[in-house]
Length: 231
Image: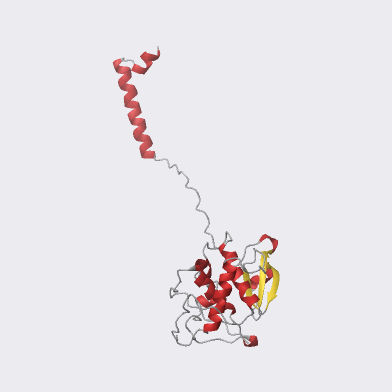
C-alpha cells in the first residue's frame, strides 16, 4: 500500500507542452539533453520550492534515501563558499555553456504533467532535509553527483563517496583541485601603473623659463626673499 503523503504546499509547475526537440543518441542508448541557455528560467521565490523541484525532477523515481541525498547536495552547495548562497540560486545556477541542474534548462519543467503524489513526496523529503529532520547520508563536502549512465570527465577528479540508486555521489576534489560547477572567478585586474613619458618640448620650455629667471635675477642684483630669511 502506497504511503499517504501530506498535501503539497507548493503548486507544481504547469504543463506547458513545449515542442519536442531533436535528440542525438549515443552508445548505450543515452540521449544527451538539448539545453536552452538563452531563455530566462522562471525561478521560484521560495528556497523550499526550488529544493522540491530539484528532488522531483532529479530523483522522483529514486528511493526516499536517494531523493534526500539530492536535497543534501543542493543544501551543501548553498553552504559552500564556492557556490551561490541561496538554494534557488544554486538550483538555477548556469553559465554560457551549461546549467548545473539539467532540468532547469532542458525543458523538463512543464514537459509532462506532474505526478501529484510524487510531487507531494518530494516536498516532504525536501522539507525534512531542509529543516534537519532527516539523517545525513553524505559528508558536507559532497556537492556533486551524476547518474550512473553518464561518464562526466570531472568524475575522476573527485573522491567517490557512495552510490544510492542510480546516482553516484562525490566528495572533496582529489589533489587539491576545484569542484565542478564552482564559480568561475574572474582574475583580479592588475594594479594601475604610473607611466612617465618624457616630453622634449616641455623640457625645452622649462629650460628656457629657468634661464630667463636666472638672467633677470643676476641683472637686478636682488636677493631672493627665501635666501634673506635663511641668513
